[in-house]
Amino acid sequence: MHSIVRLGLLSIALILAVPLQAAVDGIVNARIHVLDADRTQASALAWNASGRIVHVGDAESLADAYPELEPTDLGGQVVLPGLIDAHGHVMGLGLARLQADLVGAESVDEVIERLREHADNLPDEAWLTGRGWDQTRWEGSEFPSSADLDEAFPDRPVYLVRVDGHAAWANSAALEHATGDLSGDWQPQGGHIHRDAEGEPTGILIDTAMPYVADAMPEPTAEERDLALNLALEEIARYGLTGVHDAGASLADFRLFRQRDEAGELSVRIHALADGDAEMLDWLCENGMFAGDRLTARGVKLYTDGALGSRGAALLEDYSDDPGNNGLLFHSDEELQAMVDRAMGCGLQLGIHAIGDAANRQVIEALVAGQESHPDNPGRHRIEHVQIIAVDDIPRMAEHDIIASMQPIHATSDMRWAEDRVGAERLAGAYAWQRILDADVHLALGSDFPVEPVNPWLGIQAAVTRQDRDGHPDGGWLPDQRLNVDEALRGFAIDAAFASFAEADTGTLELGKHADFIVIDADPFQVDPTALADIKVLQTVVGGESVYQRQGGE
Image (cartoon, rainbow, N blue to C red; front, top):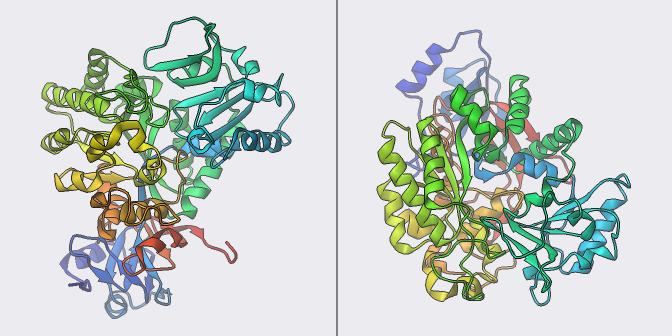
């Protein structure tokens, strides 16, 4: 049964705590999904000058509580709590918008055509960079080579990142700038340099091999970083995200976020996870967790393996389509344990990237051992992605309170070739959201933007239908792992808030929480599931402040 929240003792207490001169704003005539445990609905909402909710109910009770208030009439539009992306890359998104967009390119020729168009807007001496290529879309599905780029760009360095961020494609001019000799028969730990029969690099660098060329590229200027952040924040607000867990923020990223936050110019709440065992982790261990107005930092992001699409995900058994290859573990068990223990000893949360079943098992072992050694650590440790996991390992996540931070849209992006990579038997633990929920594991959902689009409604539809935008396959891929609408929304709301220690402040539209909400053009509980991705955000509000308003023609 749906219920209408009436003004209760808690709301009265909150009202009395607000100075009489404090401004109160509100909305009425709305279909408000509070998304609390009782599936409460309301039609009116009000918040104070601090951006905290002081009333949830109907127009009559709002008028009784605040007779001077002139609320905005939403004309029956639908309101939800602001959505939270539990795994994105804020600066990665903005910087990607300054590069050539290669997402969806159907051939090497199309990549080159897009690069030429992008090059027209750059100085002649600038490196040509891009992101989003995916060889599984091309005839033959084979990795490209530097030779494919050299004819079009013989002198200009070209460095292109694969859609998953775990492989790079460089031309010969870029390879000449490498920080080490890439020829021979050696391989970096956790990476792979593709070479020809003579031992010379072919231009494809997997995971930890990527920095050999990436580190030679010019760093973005301060102006470029400012522009990139502006572009990212605009896109995030446009799609109704009021919170993002930034999965791998550098110290420079954090300082820029903090500068914007202190200036009141951060239009989204960012839960920043430090980018590995680097400067940002050093800062957190020295200074402790950080809590600003809309910026928090109390965790670290580590990597244990690569991605399934580039066959870098670490598997317990060989790839079904590449015998002899079981992927790439970035660290030995001892190395990973040392990093985990350091972070836990600093009182920090861990979010560890693990895609293959071997990587997921390694992470579980490390987190369990770390928790035993650091019982005072606040916990809520997370595995990022959990794409392929041994079914027997899922209950262990629940037993040790490990959060699954997953991205539903990865399933519909990868379903074209996932079974080829791992075979039918291992699919039992593939993108297994419902199996994970049934085991009482906290499930926080996100997108992994810019690997996937920012728009959370694409992920919500993928979670509910397990189909692509064209409705394929009929009935959904591995349909027993579908979520219902309520489960999907909770994953992008209260469960994501829990994963950042913020469930008391965000994730639902309850009294005392931040007035973070979105106005949308359709009710997700009433539309056909195949239309969830078509829902449009009309307005995004963070702390009672409108940060996005849809304009006609958008």
